[in-house]
Length: 173
Image: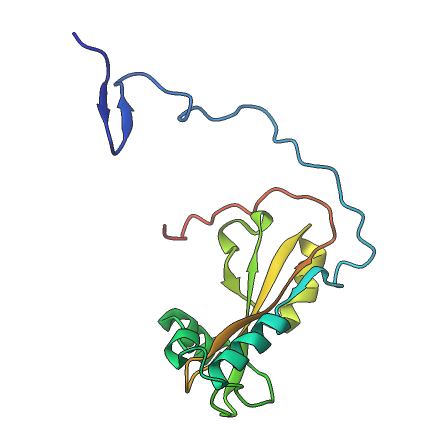
C-alpha cells in the first residue's frame, strides 16, 4: 500500500497517527518575566497618527485623493460607532458634521476570547490593573460621510504577564 495521501487542503492524512501539529505541549506554560511599569494606567508605546491624518485631509481637500478612498468605513465599524461610539465634541474633518465619535478597541493575548472587543474609555483604567499588557486602538468615525481614521494606538497594563482568559463554554465559535 502506498504512503499517506496528500491533499492541498489538509496536508497529510494518516489515520491513527497524530502528527506534530496535533500534539499539545505538556507541562506548565512558562510566562515571560514581568516588565517594570511605573503606572499601569499611563499609556506607553504611544503611536499618534495625527500627521498621517493631516496629510490625508490635505489630499482630500486639495484634490489629490477621492472622497471614496477616505470615507469608506466598514459597515461593522459604522454599527459599532452608532451603538458604542463616544462623542468627540468637534465636527467631522471631512463633512463638518457634529456627529463624530471615537470607537476604542482592545487587543492582547491575555484577553483571550475578549481580544478585539470594543471598550469604553472609563473601563480602561480597571483593565490596566487586571491585565499585564494590552493594546488600545482609538478610531474616529463619522456616521454621515463614513470618514474613519485611526487616531492613536498605545499599550496599557501593569506589566505582569498572565495566562489568557479561558473561553466561556457558552461562547460560540
